[in-house]
Every structure is written in structure tokens, then in C-alpha cells.
Length: 170
Image 1 (cartoon, helix red, strand yellow):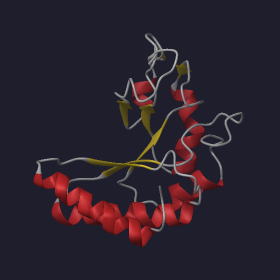
Image 2: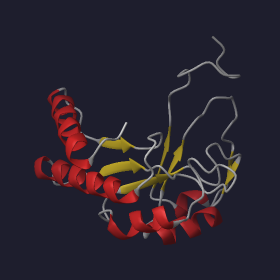
Image 3: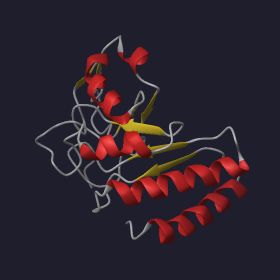
Image 4: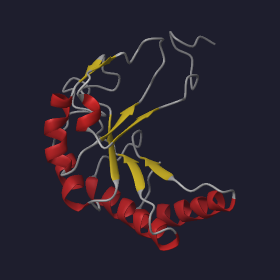
């Protein structure tokens, strides 16, 4: 959930500090499923968290998934980028923050370097790929050989059984 940059900042920094006490050194902020798709408050929160992380660990940086994280026009809740939201993120989120992107859809069957050109321009940086839902065996085999040279990084979501579905029945 997302209430406000100020209120959520206090909650996040408390959580970051508790995780650092356990030895965690790298952090990500996943805004993907919150209902508010307003870039402004998210940018304020992202930059504040990035600044907070760097005070205690100057070499660290934040990974972020925003509320728009793919380009499919048919999925209007999470996709539709590049758009005004991704343009705003690119212009105002600190350059060292890694912005994650799932590709042409939430679970795209294929992905190539060419798919990244528009979003890279909008985000004003190379994106980091986030393979969001590796539910079914073989879901993400359609990655082109040129993709690694076109992205900043590559992560996959290890959550295989969050809720029942075709690949993970109850």
C-alpha cells in the first residue's frame, strides 16, 4: 500500500534498519501492485530512500519496480509504457537507481534488445530486467542472445507459490 512519501518513508527506513541489523546489504522497492499510479509521490519516496541508503553505505543503490513496468497496451493496470509515468521517472529518479522492467508484458514469452530501446529512452537509462512471474516450467526461454548487452542487470522473481494458479494448484 502507499499512503504518502513521508509516512511510508518512516516505515521503510525502520524496515531497512532492522534488515541491516540482520546483515542485509542490498535493497529493492517494489511499487508494482499499489493502486496509486502517480509518479510524483513515488519519485519523492524513491529518491528519499536512495539518499537514506547512501548515507550508511555510499556504494549501495536502490532497485525499483514502479507501477508501470511493461509495455503491453492491453494490460492498462501495470503496462502501457513508455508513457508519461515512465518519462517522469526517468527525468526525476536519481540516475544511480536501477529501474526494473518486465518487457512487452508482465510475462512476455520473448524479449530482445530491440524491446528495450523505447523504455531506455523514457527512463533515461538502461533498464534492469525483472522476470516477474516464473510460474510455469519454460516460461522464460524466449530471451534473445543480444539482450544481456542491452540491459543493466537481470533478476527473476523466485516466488513460485504466492497463490494458487495453473502452475501451482492449492
